[in-house]
Image (cartoon, rainbow, N blue to C red; front, top):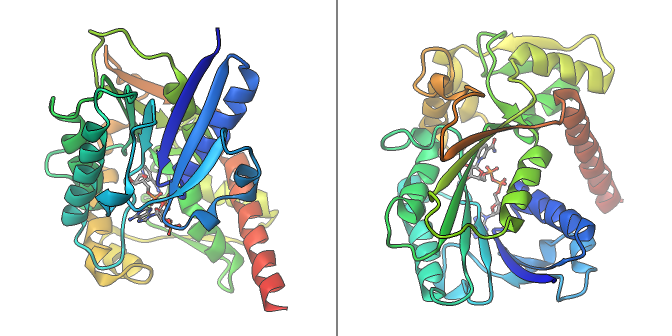
Length: 336
Ligand SMILES: NC(=O)c1ccc[n+]([C@@H]2O[C@H](COP(=O)([O-])OP(=O)(O)OC[C@H]3O[C@@H](n4cnc5c(N)ncnc54)[C@H](OP(=O)(O)O)[C@@H]3O)[C@@H](O)[C@H]2O)c1
């Protein structure tokens, strides 16, 4: 018997959203019993990749929506909602943004209650469980609490995804390595200190499987928590080696950014308002920080699972490099 399943992904423009849509489409292709329909919410639907929009509308539709505006959110046709809380760097206070957006999702879910929505798959982050939220992780801490902390979100099953750092987030290391200094400034210190780093492809594969998993019988523990790590944890030295290999270069230097220089470092790329939030998250990850004990692969129990990704760091870095090259070609094409 075939199963029809409608999944709302929002925002679909996030790295995790886009890659999970790709993984969902691939899984549905392998399983002809699953009739999958994806409703992807974008602030700007014209940003949906051509590979998605070329599909028939009953398989993929790009819908205009903004998680900051409740009137644009409608989950009534969905069986599963996959929500990735997007950070905002537009001057909005992170705590206020987290409350506003999570409450919008909660209201939209409850408005659809009694209907088809059976499952919420909520994207979060490693360390989001710590009291009050650490730095920028306040976004996830508050969202997790509002959407999964009590009984007042009327969805039968809740799954919380807590991945480590995205390999794709290290694109800035690659860009610096390719630049005039041929160096990498690493906030991950000491340089041999290992932290969880995982490719978005591995994250998406787990998210897609969770989304399509048959609904749990009533009584099963909900929420369930899934941490996603790479095949092993990686250090700045591992990142340096993977980048040097992917670029086939031997001249790239690796420089540590010591904890007391983190504010200066993040201040070069972030609006001032968000700098301390990144410093706080980073120091929590470094040795002695409150998140440093969250990295165990065997930290499992009845409702906590750890998934070990399969994509080796160097392969994930190669994908990031190819993406940078494509972007550069696009820029050159647009300029000509
Ligand atoms: N990056 C990591 O290493 C990492 C690790 C673990 C967990 N996480 C979690 O993953 C989530 C995503 O973080 P990220 O930094 O990686 O973000 P991201 O995937 O780069 O996504 C940000 C995107 O969200 C969209 N967006 C922003 N505001 C929106 C709104 N009001 N309505 C609809 N769409 C909106 C924007 O797309 P448009 O401009 O195209 O609309 C923006 O490009 C966060 O909850 C984060 O804590 C991230």
